[in-house]
Length: 211
Image 1 (cartoon, rainbow, N blue to C red):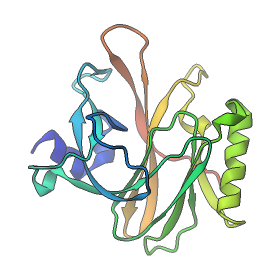
Image 2: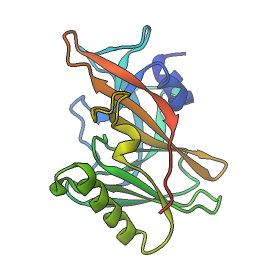
Image 3: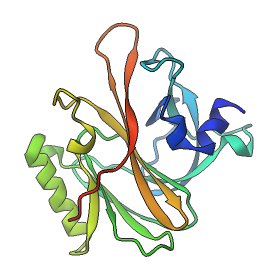
């Protein structure tokens, strides 16, 4: 197996050791629309993972010449600055990824077990960060879900360190398990030291909040 096929086989397991950023750092066009795409991963040159034996990777749409086992079909939920995006998941996608989160909120609606799930990436950085931004993003999502119930992955769920500082960023993603979407948070941050080390903050199921 290759590192790419290991990732495709189980992204959430692969990220327990390695860091995978939801950024396209190889010159490829970042998807501007929410839609199904096919991705693989590439090593991020010059960056080192804080976990022994781990490496740092980024997403890529450059899948030419790769085997089927090295390509992952996903639903990509796009990002829009100072606004929100919407997407509808279905049973045809096994995984969902969205743009890098360092203050945004991911919202996802109620599910019926057939793979259908409304998702939204909310950004209100114009509110100035902190509680004001969190509340503005809650308002964005409440409007988009039109009074229906929804869950959220908020900044407090992935940003805070063990010392309370808000420094982590996250790859927030979903996995379709027999028609029900489960969501995960993969945390990491720049160490601030030399050597390009990125600190691995773990992978965990989302702590959801019913709205």
